[in-house]
Length: 159
Image 1 (tube, one colour):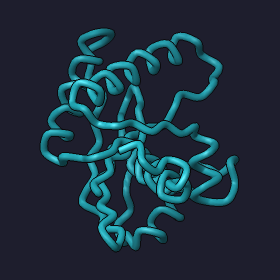
Image 2 (cartoon, rainbow, N blue to C red):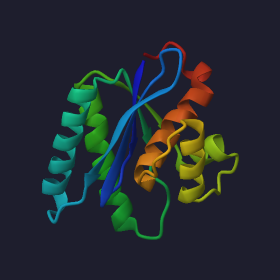
Image 3 (cartoon, helix red, strand yellow):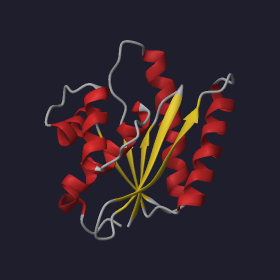
């Protein structure tokens, strides 16, 4: 099965593609970068970029990180809008989505829900035997897939 992990972010969204047929196989990753555009135009650009990635990767399942509470409510609203666009895209393309909270992903990957992004990246690189350093947004996207794989019995039959 091909699984696309998504770590949504306003300045950069990390995407990671993994295949799970027998062994775990890293198929690639990509960052959707921040542009100078704002509001709906930025969301549209991110939507189009993710649509292209999905069309090329052909995932059977998408794992996406949920939003977390932060000090800036405007940032949370904008991130929620972006996540909504990503969820809509998955629905339009007929791809099942599973969501995990950042703390749950960190707990599953490192054993501690309070781990730093750097600690998550270290464990993701070890688990997936990746020798090159990847961007933190990408390792978080891979971390969401690892979290799903660690808990997949709970989701049997949804895809």
